[in-house]
Length: 302
Image (tube, rainbow, N blue to C red; front, top):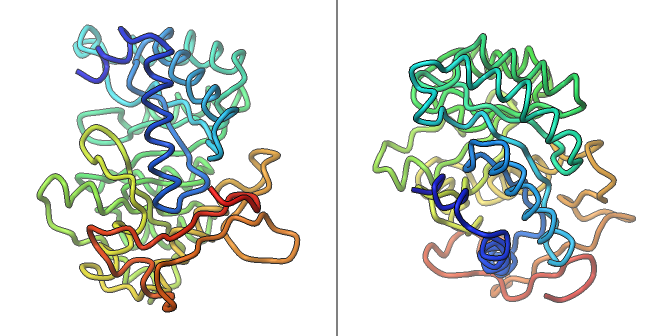
């Protein structure tokens, strides 16, 4: 239904909806997001999605880093011939996305029942030839060696990674591929919350946390994600804070001319949060409530 809606909706309607969502992100303390297409699954639908992201990015206080994800799923008409859709992505979508000049990243859902290892490699290598930097969705449901592939391909991040092997986590960390855990998704789907965040800290494997805001995980609140990490997955509030600020910011460095936030430092952007508490732990200890009193973006109170 989301794919039909994206393809049938006008850009104006999509933009209006995006603005409302970005307003909520700001209220919950998020000042920079990475946002994906991937719900058009057609040349026109994907280009339209990216165009809408660019329009909102120009006019909204939030900074949006755009990712092309035509390889999110196979449209119904190509499910019996998935390689034909892969050819469309490589021969039609990626060249036009590159010409459009909005997307910075190229993402693939590399998972059993979706894009396999060979298809993923082909799409990423094609994107590389057009200057699109790789990110990957991997190992959400089973260990399909996706995180290892992400590291081999030089992806800046492997997202989901709930079932990746310890070997792949070590390999990714050594290779500079960020593991991005999305605990809101298994929470909403009623699955076990068993992402090995404590193991990552103990082994010094770098990782990030994100909302995964999408039609099956409708949360815009990073403080809620921090609550899941601390109340259910054995992180301290400070460890969780690093995982939603400094760590994900490193996946944006050298990809745009944006002055990347993520830490408080001399000469850095004044993206700051004022909490409704004098205790730093409060940023993620109030599930169902918003602990953010004020969001400051580039020195301006939002």
